[in-house]
Length: 79
Image 1 (tube, rainbow, N blue to C red):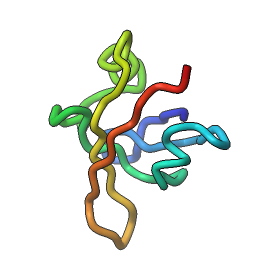
Image 2 (tube, rainbow, N blue to C red):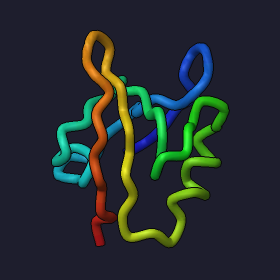
Image 3 (cartoon, one colour):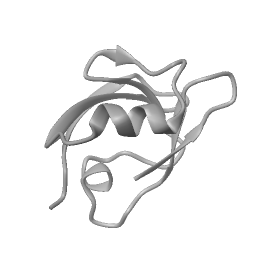
Image 4 (cartoon, rainbow, N blue to C red):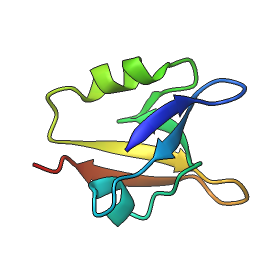
């Protein structure tokens, strides 16, 4: 997946790879990334998210979709 800064702060999923962990977990382009492993991403830029994920096999993401509830998913890195 790819990330972009979101208007008003935070991060949004800007792209998904077909068959990748994020797509298989049901995430969609435009979902707002609210936290990684419980750490809020409101003030982060994409590089900070990638640093937080570096070297990790999996992480828990909290995402919000317009007009939907916040949901948590655990993503494992594709090898």
